[in-house]
Image 1 (cartoon, protein in one colour):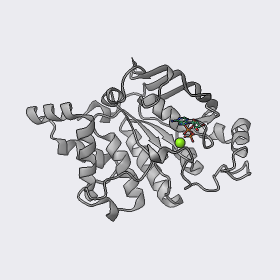
Image 2 (cartoon, rainbow, N blue to C red; image 1 turned 90 degrees about the vertical axis):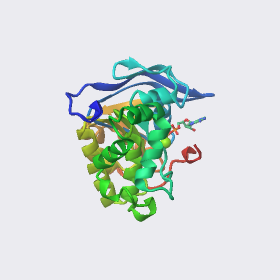
Image 3 (cartoon, rainbow, N blue to C red; image 1 turned 120 degrees about the horizontal axis):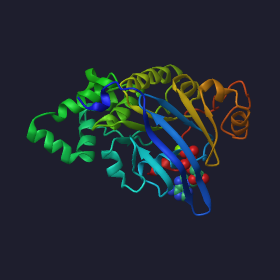
Image 4 (cartoon, rainbow, N blue to C red; image 1 turned 180 degrees about the vertical axis):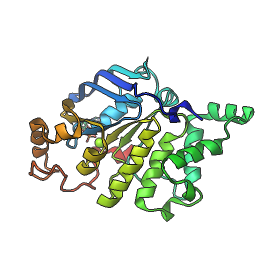
Length: 280
Ligand SMILES: Nc1ncnc2c1ncn2[C@@H]1O[C@H](COP(=O)(O)OP(=O)(O)O)[C@@H](O)[C@H]1O
Ligand SMILES: [Mg+2]
């Protein structure tokens, strides 16, 4: 059993220090200091264009950045994306990228082969951990073991979203960064999805969660960071964030949310980002 799934005392898993990303004249991330501990769900919220996806890109190595990214005590900010992946960090991309003609288990197996060929072969040769075990373990964590042989189209939307998460969990993942993983789910599905995220965190995995569904993030996250124009404008517990005047102001300034400080629910929670992530 990988050490990632064992319960350990909470320790800092991810730490960024002064993480910045510039796109031409745009400062997409400005001096972001953020931590995620083992077993913790940390929310990253903010209006469209605030820099949330850019942060995931920078942490995982897909965007050029300055500043430090430390994973499990080791600097990884100079490492290529696949090295960071092998070091234990994984991300999800925008929804809808499951292979429709592969079963759920096959969708995960493909991910194993892409990220850990060497580990996979050594497992095969030593016979210690068969790939099927790795896949089943990830499916078990998200409660999808009984649909392993189904096609994605046969699952509910919520289950399909969880397959996307499970795919990021294979191969020794310690930290998972989820970019709007619940987009398109209704309130009930979103709540169930959140419950599954808590189970994943309970195995010791650290989760960074980006989502527009405020009731989901306020409900499920241990702590939250709020980005606006690439900067952290607030961080703290859900209760503290809900009442933070700077947060309310940032959301009131965004056309995507209702102008009601009592309720930060976006008017169109299922609307995709306008930042062009789908194309990537
Ligand atoms: N690849 C890119 N090239 C140039 N500008 C980008 C790129 N990705 C994002 N941006 C810009 O960076 C800012 C932050 O975008 P993004 O991280 O996608 O925000 P969010 O995910 O919070 O909606 C926006 O101004 C966006 O237009
Ligand atoms: Mg985004």
